[in-house]
Length: 192
Ligand SMILES: Cc1cc2nc3c(=O)[nH]c(=O)nc-3n(C[C@H](O)[C@H](O)[C@H](O)COP(=O)(O)O)c2cc1C
Image (cartoon, rainbow, N blue to C red; front, top):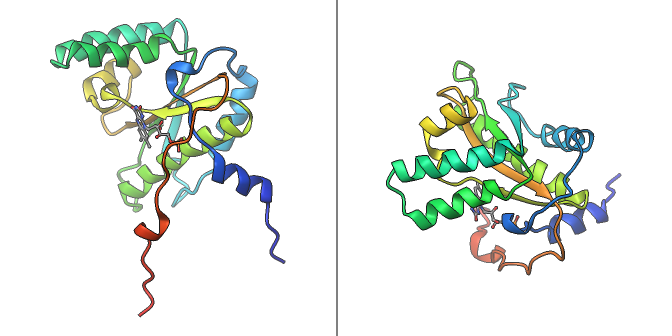
């Protein structure tokens, strides 16, 4: 018999992210984080390929990542202000989970489906953290899209990618909500 879970629906319909720079300690313990990662891995995964993995980045490694991002950004000719902001996001963080998409390119399942599963893992991690009372945010930035940076700093293989950096910690009141999509405007009924 159909049975609604109104608390889950209420959460889904009111959840929102926090700006990375307002997320501070305390952060989840390793034991608490493992529970969040378990939730993150409970996502649709066509072919049961598990085309994702997690890299937990803590201090002082985050400060090192920040510095290497700054150097790489300048090397790439990015504006100093952009590089500074992107670097600060790592330097000021206490706990970041890099969700790494690790598709099996020899599998029958199309790569895009494996990429979508990695995105689903990011959202599940974000939602599990928010539902547990943590502040959290899913971001990427130019470092995530730079193959050399991914390989040198995070040791990613050339076919792997960063689906997201999920920041987790504590913050004050949730930020004001942003405008949400007009569902009628993006929905078409294809009914002949
Ligand atoms: C794949 C992906 C990458 C993102 N990268 C960034 C980013 O680098 N910087 C940023 O400010 N927001 C980024 N965002 C958007 C943030 O998640 C943003 O805070 C979002 O609007 C929050 O939405 P929510 O409140 O519904 O969770 C990204 C979102 C996605 C899905």
